[in-house]
Amino acid sequence: MPELDDIDHHVLRLLREDGRRTFSEMAVTIGLSVAAVKRRVDRLRDIGVITGFTAQVDHARLGWGIEAFVELRYAGTTPVAEIVRTATDIAEVQAVFTIAGDPDALMQIRVRDIGHLQQVIDSLRRTGNVTGTKTLMVLGSWTRETLTSRPR
Image (cartoon, rainbow, N blue to C red; front, side, top):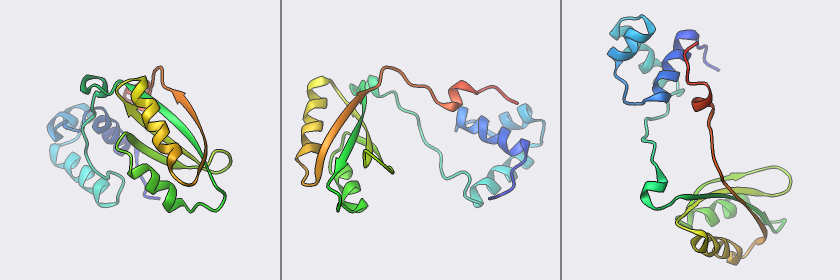
C-alpha cells in the first residue's frame, strides 16, 4: 500500500469531483504550487492510485433511464470466466461482480424501459448455466463522493 498523506487525499477528492480540474485550480484550493500539484498527480498515476480519467454520463438523457441489478445463480461447476462471458455478450450489462455465497454474480444493467429489461433478463436466463435470477430495480443512487464531497 502506498503512503498517502492528507494532501494526496485532497487531490484525489478534487479530481473525483471534476476530472478536468486544472492543476492551477487545485493549487489555489490546496495551497500548493502548480508544479507541486502536478508532481503529486503524476506520482499518484505512477503508483497506480489514479488509473485514468473518465466522463460521467447521464444515461437517462441517452434514453437508458432504467437501472437494475440482477442477481444470478449458476450451475455449481460454472467457471468465473463463463460468468464474465455471459456479461460481455449483452451490451446492456454495465458491470458484473462475482461474489461469494448465494447468488454467484451481480450484474448492473441499464435499459430503455421495462420491456427492454425483460428482454435482457430473458437473454441472461437463456445462457446455458444460469439456474435463477432475481432483479432489483434502482430507485435512486448515491456515491461516497456525492455524500462526502466537502474538503477535509
